[in-house]
Image (cartoon, rainbow, N blue to C red; front, side, top):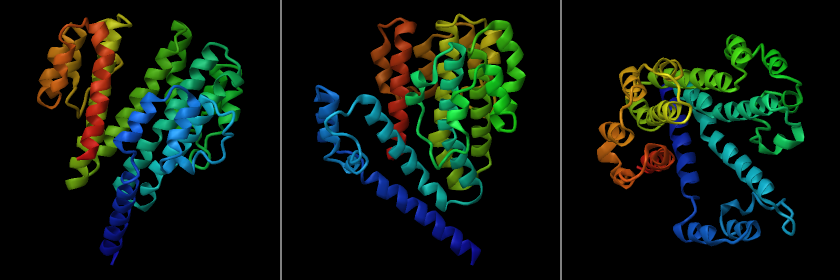
Length: 305
């Protein structure tokens, strides 16, 4: 009986995903959005889609980009949570952890704001709306006076346990990067652990989608640290992931010591990314943001299969 119940839950989650998939905007609407000259026109186009209910409570005459983005993000987060409620076991653990990336993004926003002494009203609109999803007290966290106080407020959470050991390095370098990197590494390491806990078809699909995302992120980190931050090979290795990945320690080490961007990416995913040829005439610094876009598009293409 329990196996039948589990199968029914899995089927229910799949049905919810397919229902959400059917609501994706068609190509003509995307074209209209790209042609929209202002926020008001963007909102008008979105009223023709299933997002119309999301925009119902916004002031049509005075809508601005921040309001629109927050409304859409709130809907996006809520929609992403719906299939998870029907999952059990390792699959649910993975999706719950995957969903915590929104908390991660918000905390990094607050860390940067505290580091630069920004007033809460300056950055609160940038936080992802997580009402009913996250247990963290966002207004309280946004109002703290320092990064040390923020870490203290988080002391009983997973985030506090990750940030506390990095505080001394932050004080020494006076760079919020070390705190963000600590959060990123711990989050993605645990995400990878959640993937490896799966078996069979679930594991294959998780590797195909989330595993690729972690690999792509690790590759981008390594090149950003070398090309933009000019970190040493040792530092690049310290701030990247190494295990259970295609972009493993050997790949990161090669990048740290100068492996060319396009050639390394071609070795990893060349046949899957024919668009790599478009980077041929660009410097590595100019090619990196374009590569990031290619990787994210490929990630979404994988999800469509």
